[in-house]
Image (tube, rainbow, N blue to C red; front, side):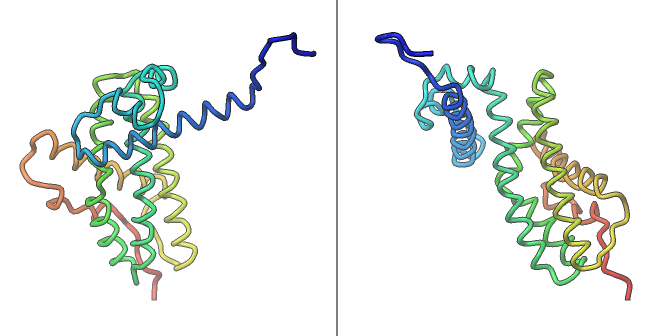
Amino acid sequence: MKKKPGETRTDPAASLDRGRATRYRLIEVTARLCKERSGAEVSVAEIAKAAGVFPNQVTYYFGSKDSLLVRAAFLGLLHDTRRVERVGRQAPDAAAFRRNVSRAVLSLPSLPPVSRALATGIAKPELAPVIDQHLQLLFRQSERFVRQLLDERGWSVGRPLDVEARTFWSTALGAVLLVRAGAHGTQADLDLAGALTLRDAPA
């Protein structure tokens, strides 16, 4: 079909690509701002300005600021887990892996924002599907990493890998939530390594 004089047409595929790019840019910018602010509130106007979009595009693409913050928090954590994986690969044995990975996770700057996202999800049930989607992604990524180590090094694990991943991350995130809620002590008081059951191959 030919265009009429003066008529403009939008390529649907190009519009879809631009929309995806805008969504991802908003998530990335929000993750960076939250990391830089160390827990301070970030406004929609600040996010939009940093991303080069209009403030109403936050609502258009994500429904709410809280929904964007949840996605940004988990993006930061998923990026940080790559560093944790490098720490794990450098461990000479399973005991060092449990110890070093646990320390690395508890020091992640992205862990507090994710704990805040979880707390927000408790107050706003409509965010539950978004949080569950990202938690499942985190668990699967961890399962793949541990499975590779088991295959490469002959290590064993004391329970199914999906349970191992869920237990480990639930313990880590729960520790941060407790500290934020005012529980006595710090994350350093937690024996996160004890939540892992990886063992060396039998001699």
